[in-house]
Image (cartoon, rainbow, N blue to C red; front, side, top):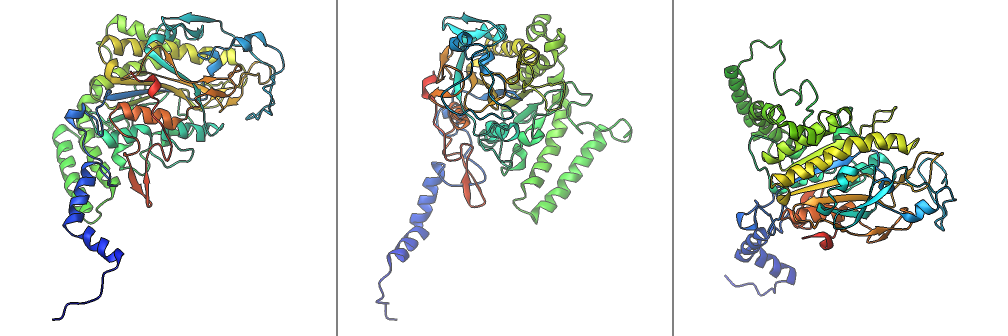
Length: 482
């Protein structure tokens, strides 16, 4: 046979090269570097201290979320000019667009301010317990949101997007690093006992990630803290042996069903959930039982005080979950359930509503920091305190504050952060971010970095796009890292 004299095109040459042994080698190299889009990331590596892409400084995260928009200028963002101009017209030199009102006069905080710690951080009298922790906290008073509407802004702080359907940061952490224990979920959510925030459980959805990475809801104050974990009292026929036999049968049937539906993560998650539920029947009652906690610990979290008992219990449960291997715990303060307000959305009376919310949060949040530190857990546990946006420095009506997406405060502690520091600043009014405007993308990138994850490499292929938590944004905030 005569050899063909036709010369290969450049495209054909590259295709033949890539489709042979060279292509196999290339795929192997890309896979080792974690550069291939896949539905499963590489496993955390021991030599990287459990990190995925580089050495990790933290292993777990607890996020405290203040639903309704906590006021930065009434807790953390001290502005002498606002005090001096109290009652004077609010005029930042531009048109002020508010959510549901016209700008009122400058309104100083109802609470006084003092300096605390070696860092000399100014803190409001509304948060006297957190004020004693300032040297362990890194403050970010220049946070910015892309929305001044609660639902989209809450999605943004949790998922990086203002639209529904995207995974929570806890789901990304679960997907990237997996679980530290087989007996508890990797990602647990403790909602406010009074109800959900805007978007409800959609806030802790796994989105397009495998369904097994969605948050598992624990409600410690409820009669059944984990829904459907145990059979109802009427099911007298259920016993440990029949329960195990039922689970085995379900596993077999679901396995056969899955053979014809490869890639259906909902079914895979359901199979895994049955197995986890069986283990939770033993582990969950133990982790939720705080009766063995010392009187000193109970007092630290405010469990014996009516105003702090609910959030305090959730913070204590969060600590117990973290020390038993849960990777990510989210604790909510505030519920979207109408009037009287039970969240941080203080349109009518900042002094009345923030007094209730701030007092209920302050002591338990400080207790969580102190308790983690005393137990040696703070060194490798990240604590995040955040809200969906802030509140305006001018009055709404005469006593309230309207929404402010242009600047608000988040703070972080533990797990590789430098305490007693501040990154960024708002303007003289606490109206807009002035230095280092910071978005959730930057905060998320920094948290992932401390967990040993490169936020640009943690991707999931969805609808033809390599999606990531930080979308196309995000810079690690090096200035607050230890």
